[in-house]
Amino acid sequence: MIHLQNIRKRFRRPDGGWFDAVQDTSLSITAGEVFGLIGFSGAGKSTLLRLINLLERPDSGAVIVDGQDLTAMNAPALRRARQHLGMVFQQFNLMANRTVADNIAFPLEIAGWSRGDIAQRVAECLEVVGLSDRAQHYPAQLSGGQKQRVGIARALAPRPKVILADEPTSALDPKTTQSILDCLRDINQRFGVTVVIVTHEMHVVRSICHRAAVLDAGQVVEVVEVSDGTVDARSDLARSLLEAA
Amino acid sequence: MEEMTFAAALADLAGMAPEIWQACQETGLMLGVGLAAAILLGGPLGIWLYLSQPGQLFANRLVNGVLGWTVNLVRSFPFIILMVSLVPLTRLLVGSTIGPVAAAVPLSFAAIPYFARLVEQTLREIPRGVVEAAEAMGASPLQIIIKVLLNEARSGLISSLTILTISFLSYSAVAGVVGGGGIGDLAIRYGYYRFQTDVMVAMVLLLVVIVQIIQLLGNRLAARLDKR
Image (cartoon, each protein chain N blue to C red):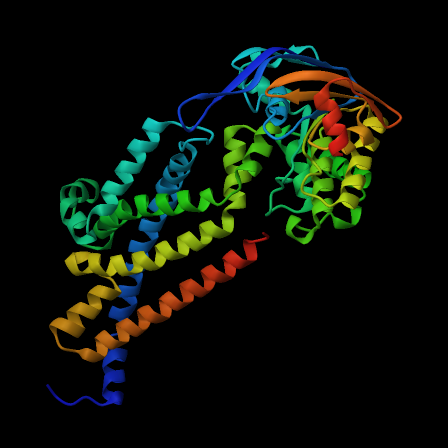
């Protein structure tokens, strides 16, 4: 579903030097899996995620999603492609002046859906995340966990093939974290949506991922398999992340 | 100068009612044109100033620098000097340099960069992540401006417009003195040049009431629109 081919990305540091956020990385993510990107702070995991929908443009390499090379697209084509790539953020990034329902409707308005279709789809998505009774509330009236559910519903609304989740539980307490992870797993299983999730917690990987890339200094150290909540890790880094959990 | 009783002053003012009403209309006209120019031209300019900043949608150091410098330039002029400097332009546009319509030209000229700065400052308060989320969902720049930036900043924009309106009520009085007419002009002509203190006091009180009403309405509307 997602193929990153020889991706490089560097950022200009304030001192004028360069910081290699992602160096010559290739990665393939299969349709229908929950794939983790795990590593310590600064390992390049968020950058790698943001390269998938081209929020960051790679300096070199190709990003191929669902058979389409995003890096070769012009701006309108990229916007259309992004409409099929949901994204969930650590800080939720909801629009404060829109109700819950209108936040979820936003990507559908962008994609030009009719009002009737939008209303129906918003109701479905609210149902999926269990917030049907909060449709007319504003984000400020919700708890952190509820806000993230709205974020997930918004990402799910345009029936994406992929949802990218950037540390979706890092701003939440442990109990809420589990319910958000359950929600993401539920969406993956019911709708077959491929989920890519960035995290620094091995717990998240164990809990919902099928596979995960362990990142360090902008490179993939190892891709680990998860079965029945156990992670088969070989690298020292993966083991240390396991112990930290 | 005869001693004036309160009753005499009231009678005096009542006799001037048509002139006062006309002054209010002139002030309204100057403000209306100035605010319309501010919203229609200053608004987009403010959005452009914001979007050309580093890290924003149309980040461009040169464009941002030129726009910022121009806005600062116009804003550095004391209003009365700006008015005088713009006399040729005013004559070109309106065909005259006196009257409220002529006064509206320099008022608009001053209001545009003023409002542009206010808009830019207001937009800066929107979290970057919200705009980024819209980009990630495939929103076009125009959709981001209208559906995200303006909608998220709407309460701050109303507050900015309130500030602008009150400042320009005061500027319009200055414009009035050099032939624009309006409430401020009436206060000066009768109250100052003709020593009719009652007219001056009445006009100042009228302005006080207008300012209070504008601020109250602005606050109410801003609060109603703010769901943060």
